[in-house]
Image (cartoon, rainbow, N blue to C red; front, side, top):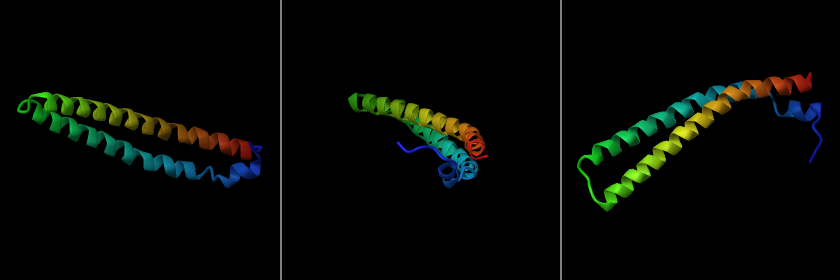
Length: 94
């Protein structure tokens, strides 16, 4: 593992973290929208489609919407943590 030096920190461009954080909100919003669309489609099918295939589809929809919600939450966590990371990198470089 290489040593952490001021030069290496500055080479990582801590200021770029602010723009990266701003780009994450649309990603999280898109995941939320996709989750809601998939859930609505599953709900629409639920009343008219029965049987083994329907149950398997509902299980898949539940898993996919849960995963999308978790991914959106992780993206939002990263977004909120990036400014703190930027400040820490800049403090090391100062």
